[in-house]
Figure (cartoon, one colour):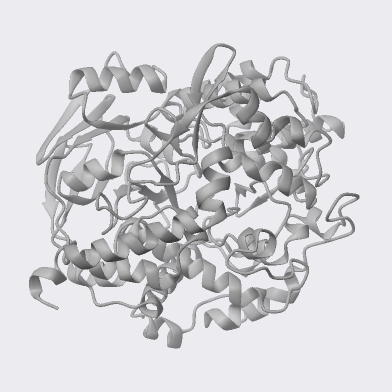
Length: 596
């Protein structure tokens, strides 16, 4: 490997800005950080781990907010348009990365940067304008207070119509812990309250335009790998048929059939009108056109119409969160509520889950509020109140863990480490249950998507009820996911690609001589560094758990009488990770990972 090839991505710079002093400086990306953490999630985690100590509160000016892209970003690799946003989460207190698609990431890469590191707090609202190597801090007067679409339009009017914007809405400005950062007006870095961190810094948006050409180490070899992996995407039924035709909502009917579609705040696993809120029904009633992120041949995005308004989505998780989770079967209302959340900059998963928690509190007589499962009256106004931090909305904006604890019923919050669980009931998928419990960022389906092998048969079908062997699968998927989020590529490519395919893409693009096992080792290193961050923050093995509800059998449906058998899998998981019985990485394992 030549020195030039070794540094194809490592020579991409880090841009560090201080909002307090309104200064910026460029820093080199060391070859060690590149080879150990790649970019995206891994690089961002390393930067935050080094700078953010336990005494730094998530919404303090000393917390970092990192926008990071990967060594494949803006290349011809399929789905190479995503961006990772890394920080300490105000919702969970954990290390957190939130991943978003669209077109923002390639512009940052073309501007010459592997990561944008934001520290400090502006004295008044600003937005950051990155035009290739020119950095400007501009007043957000007249933009602050506006919703996502008009904010995006105003910023582009003041800068360049060909630039890309990542911004917050009112939820982020008000530091609501469910606030998202939005790109393309409807693509959300939605989880963990990353938008609140941006709002706490008085930063309305980041707008970037880059014109630099992205170099690759071996163009001929990359073309060969691209030809192969695109053929794999066309060959796979999920990436070539299901997702392009129906988008992620294709999962609604399937999850319901297996009894995995959480209903009424996870009290049941089936919804009596799943068909009415399904991907098939969305295509029939509200679909306008498909949406592709940068360089994506899959095109799972939807543009829909509801109440004479067009917008992006809704995705599967949103259809569930604002639908069955709250007992709601009005598809058009769900789509309109999704549009509203996008404009306000709210995470639909945590919002819907928190609303469902509140509805159950009312159902059980622990809360007096005009909330009832299945009813939408007044709910849109309440969503606005969450973003504006008004009344009951201000309490809901703290997330379901804090909200349910306020009303002396913490067991009604369906969360792990403070992050609300998404749209799969873990009682019917044992491996997925373990992945929820051990997730470093809290309740998340994407740290290790065991729905693939346990339900979809991808890459192979395994018995969803068995606990044997699931720990090894979870470790494998977690390591692969960490590596993928550091490349940065879309998770849907895992339905078609093997780990060797990802390694071949990386090698051809950067010149880094790497195979699949080494790529997994990088993922393992990232996973362990995230674990070390959380342990330093006071988390322990006690937090590798599920809400008590999942020890109670489901009453009916395709997962009837099932519970989550977490205790049967967790000890083996720790052993395979090279951690002790308390879930702490051993020095032996850390030395092997160059983390000692």
